[in-house]
Image: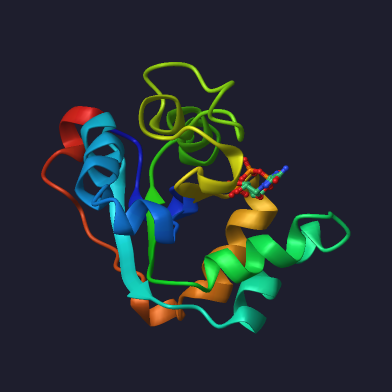
Amino acid sequence: QEAHAAEMERTFIAIKPDGVQRGLISEIISRFEQKGFKLVAIKIVVPSKDFAKKHYHDLKERPFFNGLCDFLSSGPVFAMVWEGEGVIKYGRKLIGATDPQKSEPGTIRGDLAVVVGRNIIHGSDGPETAKDEIGLWFKPEELVSYTSNAEKWVY
Ligand code: RTP
């Protein structure tokens, strides 16, 4: 009840090209929506390779970096910002472990993916990356502040 939109936590969630091509957009939105999180921004875009490199800059020393950036820029990515209490950490929980072989059943990757290179979804791993990633993918005016009808019952 004391939760107000202005002070609510936000995270960046993206359905990667494999998730989009496999028709998993609505399934993934449902899981966040049903939990009680609020969708405040969306866009579907094919990122350039340079943009993908910016998004994954933390991983630039890793052997899979180039292939990962090629893959992210290979087709449409469904980018979202979700808002809610604890959404950064709990969003990662909904997503499941990076390697779908290790993700628990009930998680998005556990239920819907098989291999690490095609793990269908990305979620910010902390408050700093959430802020950076939201800023990279969205302009401030693309984020919508509103009171959802659900939230007076969620909080
Ligand atoms: P994400 O950033 O996509 O949410 O994934 P994450 O935090 O769970 O995992 P991270 O370690 O940041 O890796 C980013 C993405 O790189 C791909 N990856 N491939 N051994 C491999 O081939 C390998 N390891 C990681 C995955 O797509 C992972 O989501």
